[in-house]
Length: 273
Image (tube, rainbow, N blue to C red; front, side, top):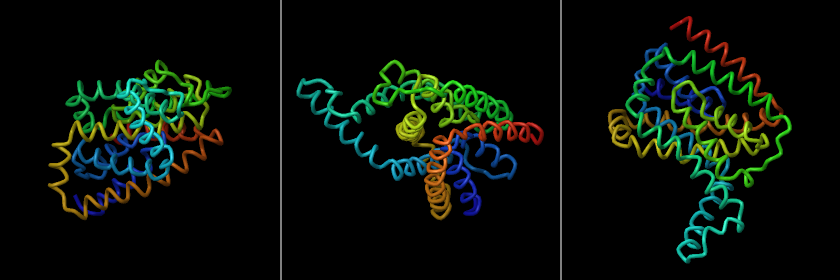
């Protein structure tokens, strides 16, 4: 892989990770059509870690608050006081995100080899692109009067949102799109559902890294340092931009544009492949 190819893949990853159009699907399509050897799932995880850095940069206040309150909660539990969730909304965030991460971890461990195979196939992408568009369209229509805030989500609904995230392990199904849709279907306000979607990405990405750490390490060693840095830096920078853009579009209720794009992309990939 060349520096230019890594740069292209990093930009694609950063732009598409947080927009509801599936970064994994676009990476598979780009690798197929441009003949880029992107290392399958392993290099994809490296780029995903870069976009996790983008979440920390943009949502540093929430990330810091969650991390701080998580350890304070563990301290309270150790002193037999219980989790004391009423002390801070960030304690609730931490618990809900942990619960929501369970389904994806379960699916990722059980179906790792199957999922890795899907990352090498272009033929699943048109159908998963189209399915993402359908899910987004229905969630957008169903969420016009949502009033629930994130701290009021509850454990059961958190688990259900996690099930939406687990579906997005398949390339072409957008993680941000499915988790946003899950939050909207369960009554969360648009901005709250979007923040949950972004925050859920951090443990999901780090979990994928730990699960496949040996392959990721081998992939990183097989590439030159400039190649790895080009992909990582470009992915982080464009990831920050796409987060800011998506927040504005969700606030203005413009997610229907992504539905139209995904239908068009589905048709193009299907025809070309």
